[in-house]
Image 1: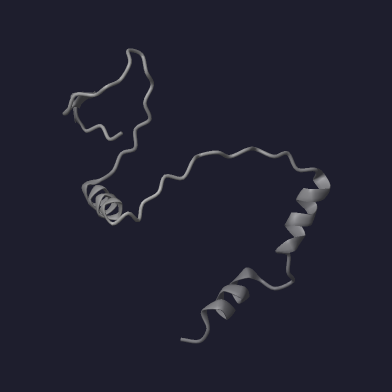
Image 2 (image 1 turned 30 degrees about the horizontal axis):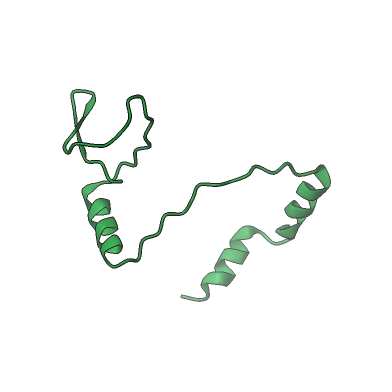
Length: 89
């Protein structure tokens, strides 16, 4: 459901009538005009999908954290890795 509103004097005023129950909570996403136009074009081209915000927090053991930390450990400075990825200019 898309709900349009205007922000005036600290209050969001609905532009169109909505079918919401009294006390129902809603989640708002603020889009600039440019973002809104971009999202609208993606939706019209059927290139927009909602991704559910389902994230489960997982506790890691000290051993797992140590192993993950070592995956990216190197004797080289990170600047050398960045320069290597960029190539010569």
